Image 1 (cartoon, rainbow, N blue to C red):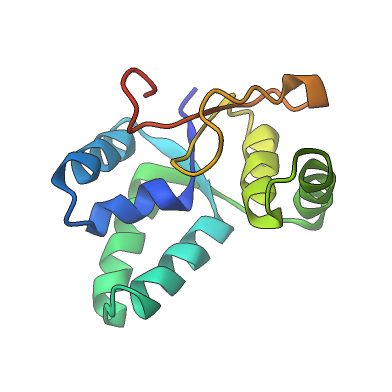
Image 2: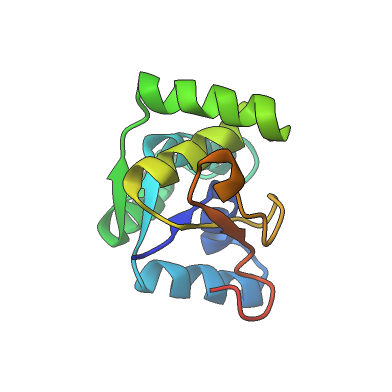
Length: 138
């Protein structure tokens, strides 16, 4: 099964860091899963930090939607995320990604800013976090 992709990995699609951009492109080429939250976070960063116009943002969003299965952010996902955040110390936003990944049946979450190698199965969450920018994590 393809991995669930965190927003910070997706944002390298628009980065000047060519190594990380190439890795992000490869992650998308192999398919993946994202949530509506990822699309919203990506849009916010593209507008605020990258100063992209709406057409440019839509081109990136369209690419992600074509390559990845997009999952909804539901109340049940949010409630599970609340428990994950309380148990782990992850932000509610990171916890929502983890909960959405578990609901989607993805055993791997690709993220640059969560703890690489963190196995959450002890919490009843069959998910391991991998940093795709560290050798061998893809």
